[in-house]
Length: 114
Length: 113
Image 1 (cartoon, helix red, strand yellow):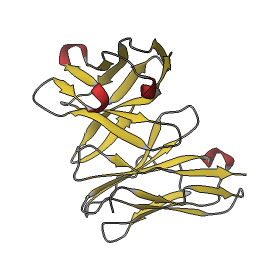
Image 2 (cartoon, rainbow over the protein chains, first blue to last red):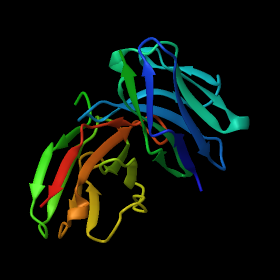
Image 3 (cartoon, helix red, strand yellow):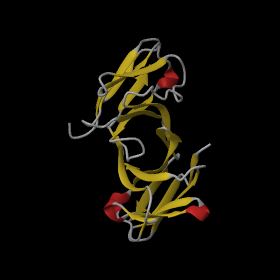
Image 4 (cartoon, each protein chain N blue to C red):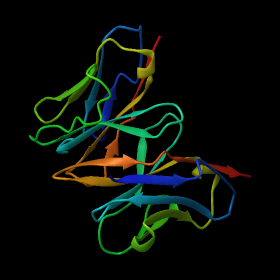
């Protein structure tokens, strides 16, 4: 069965420091992978996605993620954290055969310290 | 519309009452999803519609939950005989086709008292 594991329900970084949010997936077929961000009392906003092709994908707000098949990982990074990055981040995998649904991780709440 | 629209944004209901939550997807999107997000939890898949195919209902937690999508557009999620454990944010999303990135609405916050 397909699944997504996000290591660390809470991550704190200093403003200007590297952001690294971890995501590992389990899938028996080539996965489509996504990162979403959720600001308080809002819906989810797509940050970036991996479908096929280049394994390093760039998204909005300076975020990027690298698909590593050998490690079954899709970690999210940003070189320099900004206060406005404080939010909850969800990793998701698209799975199915014929019909598809998204399986989400439990989320990582990012706190940015001044 | 410009984005996925959900109504109402907030709903408070008494235990045992029925509720209907509405989702208006982005025009032209063939796939529509319902998820539930409880406090401190991730997103729980409920149901998925794709075009004219039979919906994937595998995530519905009980037979009190049902959903329909009329004319391949607007969807309604119905919860009958609501229970306190149904309190959550119900999120709707749509995508142009399967496996494409999904666009989410702002959600409906349901509180059962």
